[in-house]
Amino acid sequence: MLLGIATSAMAAEVSLHGDGRLTGEVSSMDADGTIALVSPLSPEPLRIRGDKAIRVDFGADKQNVDVSGQKLQLINGDVLPVRVNSLADGLMQAESDDLGLFSIPREMISTIQLGIFPQRLIYSGSGDFEGWKRDKANPKSWTIEGGEFVAEGQGMISRDAELPEKFILKFSFTWSNYPNLQFRFAEPKDAGNGRVDRYLLQFAGSGVGIFRESAAKSGNVPIVFLNRASERLRDNRMDIEIRVDRSRGQMRLYVDGEMEGRYTDPVPGIPSGTGISIISRAPQESSQRIANIKVLEWDDRGDRHRTEDRGDGKSDSLIGRNGERLGGSLTGIRRDGDESVYLFKSDFQKEILELPEQEVSTVFIGGEGVSANDSDPDGFTLSLRGGGLMTVDSCVFGSGKVMAKHPLLGDLQIERAGIISLMRRAVPKAKPVISR
Image 1 (tube, one colour):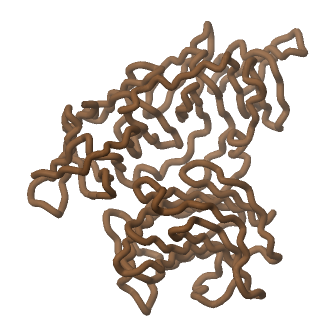
Image 2 (cartoon, helix red, strand yellow):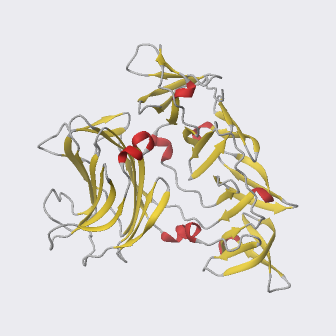
Image 3 (cartoon, rainbow, N blue to C red):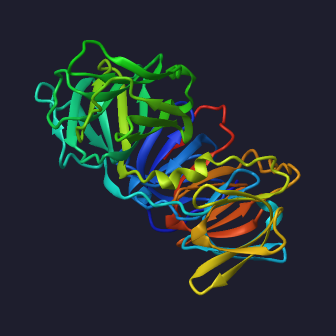
């Protein structure tokens, strides 16, 4: 098949077709895709057939990396966290610590995103209970397994997350059987179950919603509710990201990387607390897992690249640092010391503008609507540290390096530590087979 690993072990979680999940260390993955997983379940490595593994997560520790200050989006939707060095004669030169120095034909580029402000990491965890308080009534309801918080039955854990005025809260939620979880945030420290000013993110079989609790009112006011019936969610998994600006009483909700909407707190007296708590309300036979919890300070200047409009897409467009927009043609990019200068010919000026990269927010590269969905449906999606996402037709894991075949860029060499997760794009239909 497509994968081959034969190096030192990597901490990982392997998700199997049929809701199975195993944690351990990936010691090898051969040319047929068979994974050798060192696990406490067996004295010998478990061998998992490659066509039965849907996803491999290579440990939460590799996700604690700031978002890249620049990114390229390709015409097939891939996002590469890189630094753009130059553009000349239809060829762009870019580099990153994980991808090295490489060239990209201009016609394969959709967007250049600059001025992405890295978010300051305040807290990252789920690997231990340091700083957390457990419910005295059910102190053993939450445990730790494979770097994740695991709840079997009902109980609560809480901590002071030092939430700033503007913050980002992220976590991954997986479950079996009957999910029923509440994630409270912006609450007073040691708030407990009494009524206070805070936000409640609730997930049950019928969907996910955010509600506002008020110390002065009974009942919780809905801010947003999404129909996400648990039986429709593949792999019983959901990635949540909430961005909150308490100075304006506004928030944004992202589910699995897609923004669901922007919302305003309808209740006076914005919650000022810095705490978070996680409450499992599921029955004993259900298992709920929380992983990859992150709290970051939110500098919303870094969100410009998410909101800009491409326009008609046939010609190039440049968005300036202060939101000004120019139509025309990006004629080149050149290095000037440690910085880059963008050369742009506007439709309304004869002279070519020379703009330092600090003055540029986004450049849309025009085209004729070229489609690039010719990648192998049996290939993989790689999640890259620094906020990247890449589709590949095949990849081979070697000693410290990953050799990948990209549908647009051809053969690439990637630092092995730069890959956060690997997901098979075509989900197999057969049940998993594990042998020793």
